[in-house]
Length: 330
Image (cartoon, rainbow, N blue to C red; front, side, top):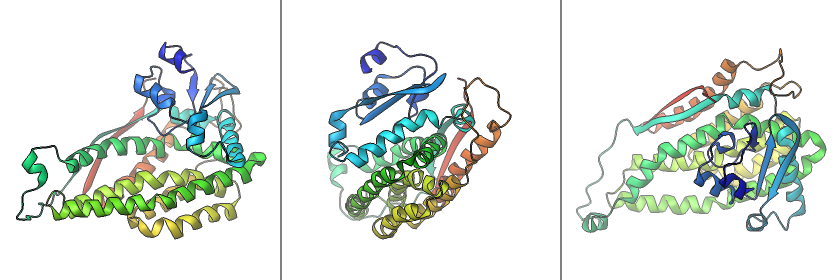
């Protein structure tokens, strides 16, 4: 598959299931970086939007073993059931989301604070090397660009696919898979704690302000934990509140107490917004007319609400995010 993609072979209606990377699954021209990213995924799901009766799932055994799916039969079933549900979950909502373009235009701190005078020379100043802090801050718009797309335009596809998986008698398998994901989220808090300590050292050296530290930690929290709402909201939507609460209880005990409260509020707001996503009508061919098609304006408004949840949290940290959203030229 990767060899064919490198050679440029791709039907116009081909789709990839959503991933951690920019929406290359919808682009007609895949870059070398896009194709390389596919090789790092445990599975790649390819299907034709013109014929949703089948899909082709390519399994990367190396990555499956690295991510501990290979030896966990129930997690494997949950993952495979989810992937097979992707083409079945295509409908007017997912089609509308594919017609919308999103891009971060700019992001910056609105009221910068001066850095502390330490009375000592920073090792970076002595060597003339580029500040690690500056590199981190400059990456924030790109991180938010990817996160914004994932939580707004890609979200309906993941939500509806997970909901269909739950409704197709794979609820226990998907729950097991997500319990593993929640445990991994809990284990990742140690890394966040280490990062916070490292950033405080930079504050003490005068390389970073408390304002910048808070911003960096918030962006990390948003990026690392908000996508979990895509896994939990479908259980509520499918009438499985006990399963949803079992997942959230792990977050409430092992994750949320260690995050910026703004990130926790964002999670709650996103989860509720995802639960309220309009129920789709029966799947139909992309070209087939449907009186129940979700208006594009409604999908844009729904996606904008997601982005405003992020922007409001960032504004508390004096960070202004500018973006554009409109109809795609594709």
